[in-house]
Image (cartoon, rainbow, N blue to C red; front, side, top):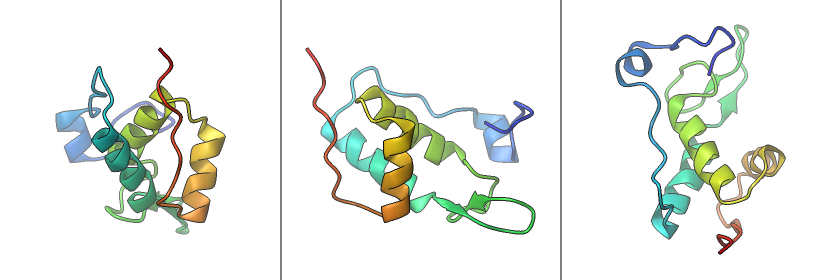
Length: 97
């Protein structure tokens, strides 16, 4: 979310945050990894923007992907490293039972 806490574009103001499913499946994990990699930051003079949709970084899909990966035990630092490497083949911890 932006520093001001306000939506950053018309889509976000109309739709809000993407919900995290109550049970995260393997398919959700694949989509979350794809979201954080495709919607990575790109430097611009006005500040970082989403490489995919050109909204201020982090966009709503990137934030959703991070929330999914956090729910499975990845830290923000681990996700940042994943984005920096562009690593599509990541091992996500199994859910603790």
